[in-house]
Every structure is written in C-alpha cells, then in structure tokens.
Picture 1 (cartoon, one colour):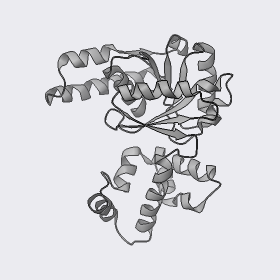
Picture 2 (tube, helix red, strand yellow; picture 1 turned 45 degrees about the vertical axis):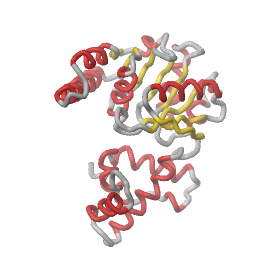
Picture 3 (cartoon, helix red, strand yellow; picture 1 turned 30 degrees about the vertical axis):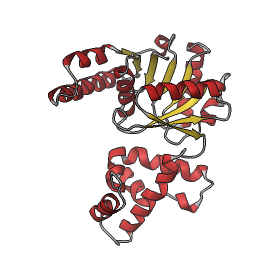
Length: 269
C-alpha cells in the first residue's frame, strides 16, 4: 500500500487532502511556494483538531500523530521518493502542465502523478509528459476530510494498474471511489452545471429569492445544501471558472452556458 505522499498546494483542498492522508498513517510532504500559506494551513488544521478534541472525537495523541505525519517543504526536489503526488494548485492547464513536467524529472518513473482538478482534462495535463500512463485525476470534494466521494479519473493513456492502486488507496482512506473518464467536468461537475445554472436563472428572473430556492432543494428535493449555499462554500472564484471550462469543452452546448451573475460578482471582488 502506498505510504509516501506529496500534496502540492496548501490551500483549502491541499491541506484537506494532506489531513486525510496523514490521518491514515501516510507520510505527507506538503509543498507550496508560499511558506506563509503553509504555516497558516497547518496552524488552521491544528486549531480544527483542537475542536475535535474538545468534542471528544479524537484525543491529543491522535492530533500529535497526525501533525507529525505532515512535513512542510519548499522545494520540489524534496519530493523525490514519494510514491504518489497529488496536485491541488491553480485551475489553469498551463500551470498544471508546467508543474507536472518538473515532477516527471524529479520523481521516479513509478511515482503516480495525480491532479485534484475539478474540470480540466487529465489527458491534456498528461499530454506534455514522456510517461502519461502514470497520470490520473483524484478529485476530492470540499471539505476533503468530510466528503466521502473521490472521482478517480482516467486519461486516455492512464494505465489500469495506476487506477487500481489509487482506488485501493482512497478506499483505505475511507472514501468512496467513483471511476470516471477524462470528459468535461467528469461526473459530478458535469451534472452540477445545470443545477447551478437553473438556480441562477430562477433568481435572475425573480421567480424566487435565494433562500426559497435553497430551501426547496434541501427540504423537498433532499439535497444536503441548496445551490446558492453550495456555491458560497465552493467560492465563486472556483465555481465560475469550472462552469466556463465545461461550457467551452462541450463546444458551447447551451445546457452548460454559465450565468452572467457570478461573472459580475467575481469582477466586483
């Protein structure tokens, strides 16, 4: 079983994935070019663990063990020897390709390279590499320590053995692995685009206010969160670019056309 992990990016998803791996005994190297961000992320994790101690969900020993399993690193060269690298950086193809090129030169040929992308083609990310067969998607959902689902995504050239190892690992982490192909939005985000889109249309057409829409979807349709609350959790800065990616990747199919409202909200900051 894989035990040496690297997570690239100390944002919300990165530290969440690192927590999941560390909680299950993996040695995790957490990389970010911004060392202040890494410190903030680990301090935030420590505070969350303290709250769990207060609630009796874990003990002090559990916290100490988990934090000892996470090592902050500031150079990609220090990732040599990792068996799996999970990238959770900016949702931009060129950024991910550049990062994966560097990883291919640093990590051994047996190292699996995974992206936590929510919508970018795994095949496209791997296309710039000499060994695209070891590249896959591992799409965790926010918050990663709580949400059970992980999409295990195959690119055109991803080897079955790589997918099998990744599936075994995330299952051991207590996750539910959903096998997906490298198509726009994969499974969840493809289904979710019309969900958000119709909610935004209803609001913009003044058919109902935000609270009513969310309440209807939660109380009547059985969703844990309504579309607007979920968009708030994800963040417009994350959700809207995903909508644009899926829309353009689906050759501008009108079913996936993004609303102008989140665009304007994003522009307003």
